[in-house]
Amino acid sequence: MKKISILFLAMAVSLASCKNEKKDNTTTETVTTETAVQYVVKPEATSVKWTAYKTTEKKPVGGEFKVLRFDEKTGATPEEALNNLSFSIPVSSVFTNDATNTRDAKIKTSFFGAMLDTELLTGTIKYANGAYSAAITMNGVTSDLPLEVKITEERRVVMTGVMDLKEWDALGALESLNKVCFDLHKGSDGVSKTWDDVAIEVNTFLREN
Image (cartoon, rainbow, N blue to C red):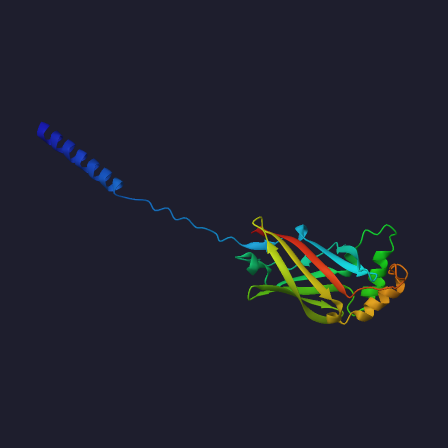
């Protein structure tokens, strides 16, 4: 009887030892899944400023559009996020901080109001062969605006360009604006002039999605 008890004890120890060895030889693999970073333009952090010019001395007149809408678009790189990004700008959002509170109305009615499709300016940013441009539709005409683009390490984006209004058949609208601003656009030489080039600056931010 004593021999049988010893035998059972030996078998129990042997089985426990086998279980421990089996457990020790088992490795657990941890699978980690990394999500690729996606960039997207942040509309609420975007501003669109412009500078027009008057008088023969080419004095600057600054303004901005208070509203800019972007379509939702992501990209694995900032360039990919910006490429083919569509936008629209309501003309009614033009703002010049004019002390007389009359300039904005003149721009809306006598400049944009003299064009076709006066409600919105629309366009698409394009990136190809290391260069940026914006295909902008204004006055029923779509034309490319070359852009200089700077992207900082903080993912801030600055896009600048110069619109030649002739490219959008907008000289008639420019003449309409100059008529209502005739005296205000006179320089020291007595000549009233409104220039047909307009500098554009867009500042925005790419957030990680």
